[in-house]
Image 1: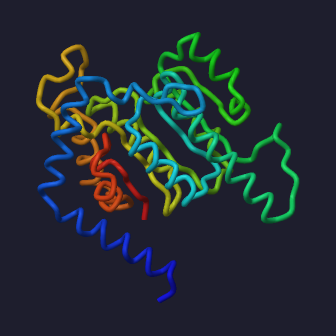
Image 2: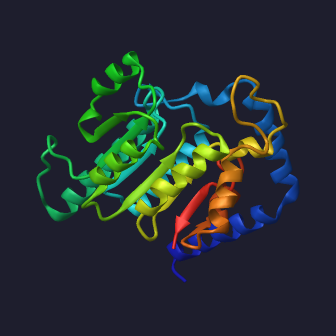
Length: 258
């Protein structure tokens, strides 16, 4: 076994041991619950835009993008745009690296890989900041409910012709909404790619943590994922991602398409 393979095997064994360590998993869950009330996820930015994610999930997303090398990333939920910028910047890096490897010149005005964001309310100041960002030329945005038939049809039309598609769901976190998003957008995910459902952690937190929101324990993204998987064998939970992160707002939400 060469040194590279030896290191990969060591990491795989480390992740396996973490997946079996109930004590460290319990401590991680307790810490995540404690910092959720302090809005810890609001503290971070990507290339100058607030991303509202914990750093562990930001790392996981960039790993998946580099691994899959998608042509299109569809995201529901835009907020301040940090997640769109993260996805777009990773796609730009992939295009650059492929161009260097193939001895080609890039045309920055017509990028092949793109990000499509959907949000029911793209606030004017956020839209302006996203459109002024250096990554804006890779980003398309649609305003409207992600589960409205017209919006779903528009996304499907814009997705046509892309070979490798990745989906990230992070909008309304109620069971019914997330399940409808899964039914609408999971079929667009290419084989071997991922549909990432954020905030499944709501189901694992104490009830009543979101008194001003319509979601709670029993009515969350995780309950939607469970129902979706119960009738859809094309996807499986990538448990290794959760095991290596320990801290994630998407436990059971990293869904890989077979």
